[in-house]
Image (cartoon, rainbow, N blue to C red; front, side, top):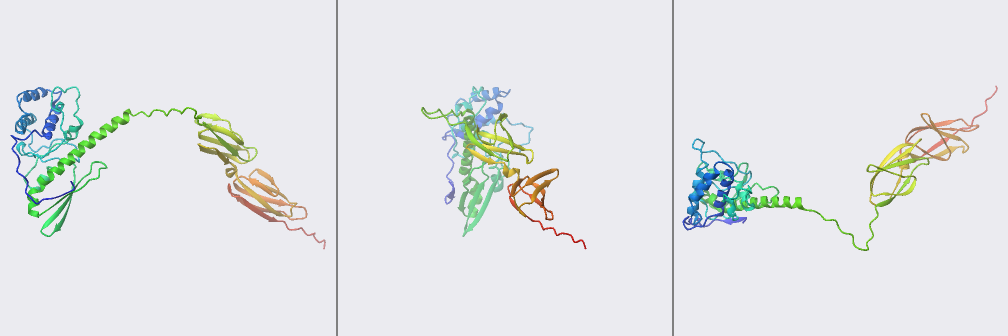
Length: 391
């Protein structure tokens, strides 16, 4: 329920002598048994249980049994304001006296194994009570509104309040901190300020119980999902009769400058590859291309289909020569490398010196920078030589 309007005072509490035992009371008894199970105090728990053979007759008899059990945990020397351990971010009901517990509480009915001392072997609560067993009801330090609200919060729990005035009434929007990725629906309460001062906490009790149930359900669902994930096994898909088995290879075509040698690996295995087209295994293949003039280049392929790759895009770029006269001899120099060119050529990346010579003409040169996969044109004009005068 995301919205409620309070116009009537709360109904009087029914007598515990005629009310049935609440699931929350059973869960509390189960929680206390888990705390003493396997310890020296387990026999005390069993003895007290035998002293209340009619504890399930009504809520009053069960609360009397529960009070005797809880007395086992009272240390006369301990500080009365000590707060027990509990799960963070879980809203819980204020720790009122046993006879004043909310008769309208609702929760999943725990199994008899939760309070049966014979359940020593399992050591676990049932999923329906697991979430409740992780929460502890906080003691209320006073009767004020803030003290009662604080008693509804677990350690680290948060409540955000937004108040809007509507004439003589106010509307409160109360939003708790969500559990994980849960989408929280806020609680809306509308009435006079004086009425909310007195009845706010009691009006929030049903909402608190719903939040506790949500946490318990989320905990049980998460546990079931983890177990299902551990046991889940995906069976292999059987091949249909008459269906051809898919090929485990693809066609890889490699191009590069003449004289390029190739090596390749598939995982840790070597694969034979050369210039041209060849069948290679599907998957990840790393190809290494080596050339004495154009260097070494590595390319990794994720092959699920046929593929073509031209290593010339990494080895260098095409050079077009526009030299006058056409008969000029052209060379390209890079360090100790000299390459003869005519009309067009292919050079490795880097800086090159282009030189042109022709009979009857003055030699010319030009520096260029070659970038892989970026062709360019080089233009040179050699001037004619004049005969020197003897006078």
